[in-house]
Length: 567
Image (cartoon, rainbow, N blue to C red; front, side, top):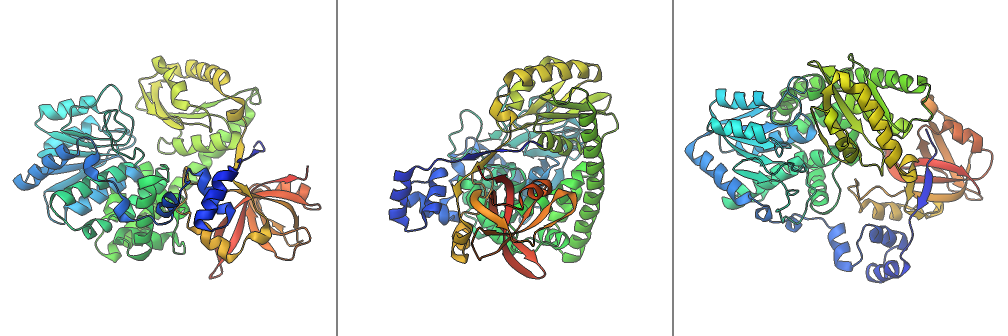
């Protein structure tokens, strides 16, 4: 893996001083605020105090009035309603949220999640047929549907209406649905564009609650599901997402739903959980259902009404995830060995690998691992129903979706965005795709995108890390895209002599500033060899701060991202 280039953010000193005069806090924090575009006292107050009242009116979303009107008609006339969601965390939490909300006062409900292997992503024709067989008059599609033109037309011919709650970019106009709730549609003036799919489902529930004068408290119990979706779908942690995540984390850590409580018990993570816990512990368990089994297992767990059945369902997801990890690691190891064995491995700018034996539900994880390990756009392909089915991941600064657009004549279908995408193609087109994709990446990837960059917010001496500093830094949570846990750098640190190497090239650190007395513990993943080359002399570190739970106690720890010798 290439060593990253340190890119230290510039400081807008006049704005930092102006904010410091208003807030009277450490200039390091004022600098972090300015880097996030927060430059006034009022904006800082909103940032530090996320609250329910700052959520936007859901009726500002295009088609929301039509969606509420159609759903209200269905509720009053007793129509059967099908809740349709994607099989990942965002889709399953969406279905669980809407079912949980509507089932409090309405029983003629059903839900459907497509089979990842047989039906693939989006609204499937099999799903439409299921709706017809079950006598459904209304389908609410969540975290999918904005591209389901054909499925919606067929459903309409059966007398079935669609309401779509999606957050992906529309293509080829909008489906012929009763309502298309999607802030990314060009004519939608909703103030915040980056909601998760579950976030849009929540706004729909919020609108129905306002329409019926339902107290806001009825909705707050749904926020833990929204927080899980925001964390795991990796949407920007800004604006309304940050408010919903903040409120949802509070709900999750105080009065979670029974299903999520059971999942928390099975993860053995100490509370309070944070966004990282949701991404790396809770999310994979929910996803495991759809990757290796039936995504409805996850929904049933989230809808559990008693603790015994919830713990049993969560235990099944833990077992699924163990299976997933075994397959995942085996596939990633095999893929990595194939990359390293390629004779032109050093010259290639991209990675495209195919095996008919790889599991379709895991190829996205494998693509992420390859892109991260080798810092190149990566595509992992397997065979499904006689076709090559692939998942792709990019590196920062390279537009993956634009590259795939230049290959679209080779595909049956494709979709995604700049960072992640999927495609289907004839197996005989794989060699042509390998050659063309490599050529496109070679021509378009910039030097910056080709080489990893470690973005650093500010200098920080170890002695400045105090309990008061940590309490203030925690007010920047929840962290996520566009509100990352800040990476600092400290110069002239040294090993105390107590650092030790761990397995897999990790190192448990014990550091202090040169000449300093305060000792700071930390962890550096994959940097054991680098540490060995630096430990006998002063060096610089890039790090962020995190809490660790060890032997029943919480403590502050350095998570070291990189080290370098003194210039």
